[in-house]
Length: 251
Image (cartoon, rainbow, N blue to C red; front, side, top):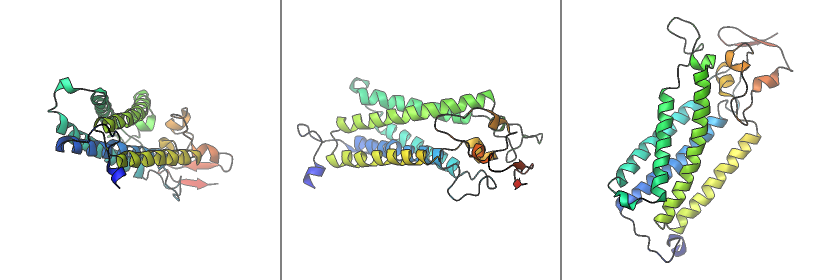
């Protein structure tokens, strides 16, 4: 226990005040725990285990988990930043600069989310009653948004991991903190790899609106690496047809 509580660098003391200690806790909780979980839930649980897809569509579990999780990350980041803002610029280190880079990426993600466009489709028709919408039609802006949102998201998550490690070293954190992250992050990576190999990274368009080949989004290339369209795998097994309510019937 004494060894676990001792700082990682025995030549330095682990002496941090209230503001720095709570800054570290909020940032590690937000970016080291909640953010990666929200990413995993959004990537691999668009179609839930046991869900009767494509009869049952658009569970929104992944969507709610993603935005609620990252809303918590946003709140924790603002709180953590406020704790250390009084620090002087002359004390800026690589950890500080990368931390501001993480927050800049977070701000871009929030802005992109606000500007992602309309949904459309049967569940969110336009005011004129049509199914038109940026997501339903997979407009150029929607495709651009998805590419930017995913790319920036993974990049910011990796940058946050580096920033956390630099922060732990700067604060000369106890060994047990390094050990917890040294177990937690590899476990998340193992879960990510396992779910990816099981083919659970599903195209969100099909998860929401089904696999009708006439739908606009199903006529486009796959959106991103490692993503599959389960509807393509059904084509050789049965002939399916959709009505306006997006209900499937075999014939």
